[in-house]
Image (tube, rainbow, N blue to C red):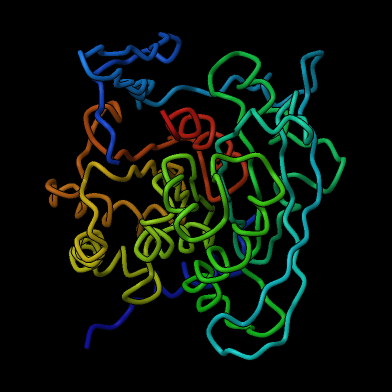
Length: 351
């Protein structure tokens, strides 16, 4: 049996403590180009051709620090969302109330049922909460300023971001909570959340959620990234886009992406195969800081995944593949790195 070395054990402790498609692709690199739907007319019927997805290039772009300041631009709002969940592993009928903090883009109107929004669910790191990102309902934060500015500048389409927590009232094991959060996500959170907010899900039956998977993303920082990899391997049929920041896959053990990278990469590839999906059906934009404690575990996994290029296709643009690793050279295991990776990764979600 392989043993985790001392540095890996230290990394686990630091992470747990929160240190601080099937649609055709098009090879294009501009985000502002507009693609319109055409129609092909036959003698029998008109068949609409759906717009093809367009992605900006994946290459790292430095974050303008002024994006994190309050300015006179249209501002989104931060609201609190509560929902009920159960112990999705232990069973029983006991219900527990949990909350998420939600960023709604400027112009969101709960009475406008025609306008639909892509949605990203994003998880915090160890010892933190959704407040780490958005501070609280009605509060101002650098993350909200960042999203506002990116939308105002046309760098990303208006989207809803739902910041969630893996902590529960029924289990104190952080690792197990992260590895199994996907059950709560699919069974409890998404049905409740997408019943209230105007996402692309026509209904919140399993079929309705699956059919809108190209309009849904999941990401997270540190232990939230561990949660993201677990969601990827278990819920590809519900979610197409993934943004794990500063964290590796722990399916084969804590920090296994660092000391068992080839086996971890193969495990993820097998999960794709077993799901019935292919390399054309998902997108992973991962990242970390150059001085990040998680780098030693994430980057070996990334390098191993690159070798399995029939499943994980490294690319400069998601029109040509499904996998990219963003390195913020000056970053540590901190909020600054999360902002830089989200600034680069969010525009790549949804095309």
